Image 1 (cartoon, chains in turn red, brown, purple, cyan):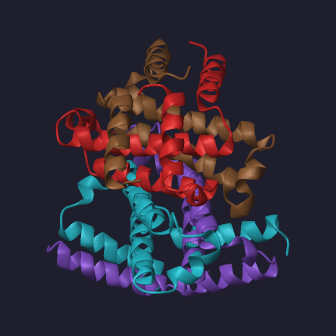
Image 2 (image 1 turned 60 degrees about the horizontal axis):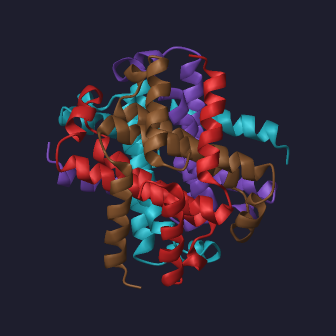
Length: 104
Length: 104
Length: 104
Length: 104
């Protein structure tokens, strides 16, 4: 499921089926997202900087890192949906702005 | 650009064209990601919880929120690439695990 | 003002004088705290890990880092006050637990 | 232990006794701090905003919140020490700047 729109729809359906929309106000989703970012941080905090990429390429860290990154992504997609923001369009626009700001 | 693979490739190219790979170790990318999460937080921190979704639906907050969410997404996509993690597969797997954990 | 109780009282008075208690619910304070953590991150994100301490010892980074750390501390102190948590006692207790958990 | 200088000295001694100084570069400490902020977030994420302060005043949430806030404080104090920043002086200065910026 590499498509952000498909992820958004899947998260929307998942939330509705459980009646969880009432928990998904923007601030709560942001706090939840930071919780997942924190779990990602805990995987990496004491790894030597120069070796972190290599170490994270080995199991079980690789799968764990993928899970935490997935959690961050899912809350981000859900937050965008709640705010009515087109995340894909926003990312495309931002990449264009970045390319203008930092000429290659 | 709603496809995570396309975003990954665009970020990879953007980084390579500027010779920025040397800055993109996992810890630095995580710290940068938290910086963007912080900017997202600053948009919402003092909004009353019950009104945040409505307020964020209006300009200029809507566009600003989209920009910060895009930044979080782009660093997340880049981090996954550096770690060799398939973010789309991880998200799909995590949604399946969530559905098993929380039966509708 | 190195005493946490004095900081708590100063923040409490500052907030009351401006009638800002109504903004200081726990979630809003946490979101604000993350905003400040994000600003701290932005100062360090692209510094090479091995040189960050030396670079941060020079101006203007040193003063900037102090400002962002102060902001994090002030929101943390304020959050503890709102929650009725004795932050100094909690820190002392945690240090004792850490010493038991990780024998020297 | 309500004094920031005493906390700094206790953390410095704790770190030295275990030979952990080599792990405490600024970026690693920031990543660890975000990990603790994330744990704090996880305690609050789904609490209704209006009830969070009351709920957090009850056990076991009160003690748990104190522990996570203590962890954030201890890493912040340690980071300041590593950077050579006088956290108490920075907080006092920041309160003075805030008072000038936001006249009561």
